[in-house]
Amino acid sequence: VQLQASGGGLVQPGGSLNVSCEAYGQWFSLNHMAWYRQVPGKERELVARITNSGATHYADSVKGRFTISWDSAKNVAYLQMNTLRREDTAVYYCHSNLKIHYDLPWSDYWGRGTLVTVSS
Image (cartoon, rainbow, N blue to C red; front, side, top):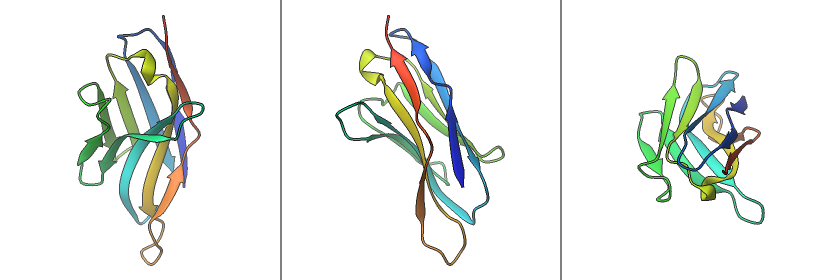
C-alpha cells in the first residue's frame, strides 16, 4: 500500500487549502485514514482522523476549521482547511491503518508529507 499526498502550497492567513491523499494498492479492510502534521523540532501531531464508518476526530486546534473526508470509490482522503493561521504551517502527512489480509494484524502506513505554508 502506498499513500501519495498532494495539494500543499503557500496560502495567506485566513485562506483555504485542500490537500488530498490517494491510497494505492489492495487491502482487506480499512480501519481509518488520518492526517498528521509536523514542524521542525516538534513531534508529529494528529490533525484529523476518519474511520471506515465515517466517524471523525479533530485536534482542538483545528475544530471548526478543518474537515476530513474519505472517498471510498476513489480511495482518496481529503483535508479541507479553512481560515488558515500561521501556526498551521507544517508538513502534513497522510496516514492509514488497515489490514492487507484478513489474518494479518492492523498496520500503519505513511505517505510522504506535503508542505503547507501560511504566510502573507
